[in-house]
Length: 248
Image (cartoon, rainbow, N blue to C red; front, side, top):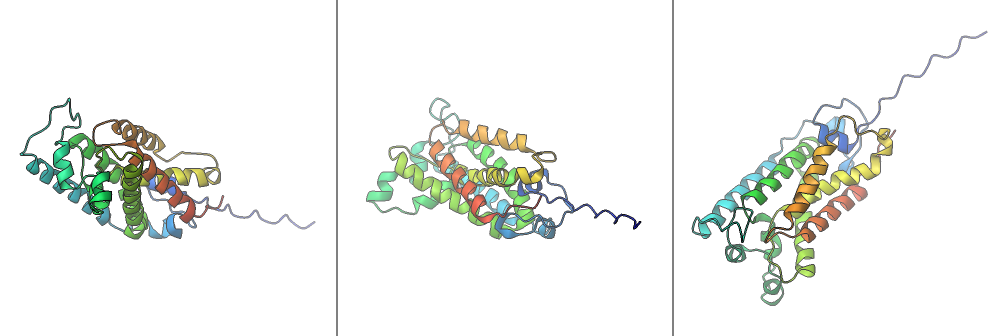
């Protein structure tokens, strides 16, 4: 009787975009195709997060310019509990004001609003999101994957806010950062089953915490959750369209 054929070697399980981005460790697994069709194992650790660092530096510098324009004053917590400047200062620097965008043709506000912040707490939350979520993704997939997601989510969020909350002055990189959050949740929707229904090795609890904290911040002055939600949907759809499902 012929001996039974030797068992086939176990095929290494692919690592999902969520697991790769949130765990921060080395996968060593081939074939983990994710955002923009890049292979996680091939690109892991190749790119320095220069885009995310540049965004952090620009946001910090803009915050300094805001306080300078506000006479180095911090507004009373009753009017801005985010420890920041006045709404008038933000309007002068390029906040989203629908009437000015439509009637005065100040279209540049659709871009500048994403680089302003209501205050130090608002800024700190967004920079934490950018570093904790954006930097690992850029290390793995490079700026050409992260930068379009970040920038497009910001513009769409401001446009939605201008249409849905025309009477509210709004600022913040929250829509851009929520685009990163949405991309992770989009990955989870696509590849949860492909990763054997396990979130082991990820920091999904951190993702949930950041999501809830950002939504809570949307009730503060000059920040609105329409920007958050539309940025989130942009990132979510970005992931659904541009990610391929990994193999089991």
